[in-house]
Length: 220
Image (cartoon, rainbow, N blue to C red; front, side, top):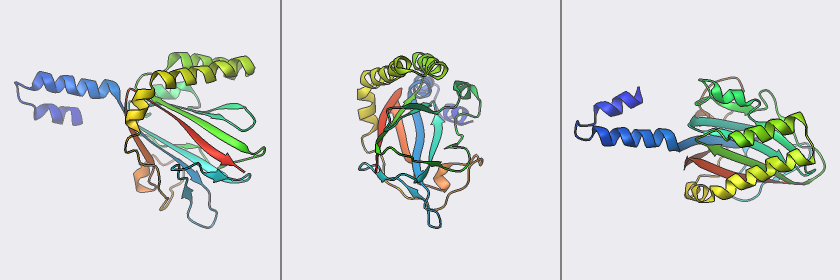
């Protein structure tokens, strides 16, 4: 509907240029939102502020929110304080094929919260988002899931590092003026396909083709 509306306002002489612009946006620009939420029990839940490295403690309960909005194939991994690698999102790469993928709000976990456990140390989340599916990364991840060992883990981590290095300039451009801080007003439970804009103030990322970020937590 939006595409048709834009085309109607293009003059005949500018129609070709308009079509090229729309194609470039469709093929290259990615848009998504993310947030890490800490359960505050009887108080308002808190969105972690990543303007500095947040401090969390064993037993703290958390939830992650991801909202792909346009052309954003999101990959999220945890490399924890025990040097274990976990695939956080997606559960299955077939999720990317769903017509409802873009515009949906994904809660991790789907229900309830996950708890931080010992040992303490640095928790690293690797977040990648791309306008194209990263087939090699997906293949290496599937191999790791089937046979989790030091070799398959190292292959996934190496591919993540390689992708980030290759596209570091695009990430730097996207992070100019990027909003980080925010707090939750209210929090609708999982299972409701509504925009997070009504409930929290997530970090919104707009980038060309690729975005990569390491999200660090100081676990004490």
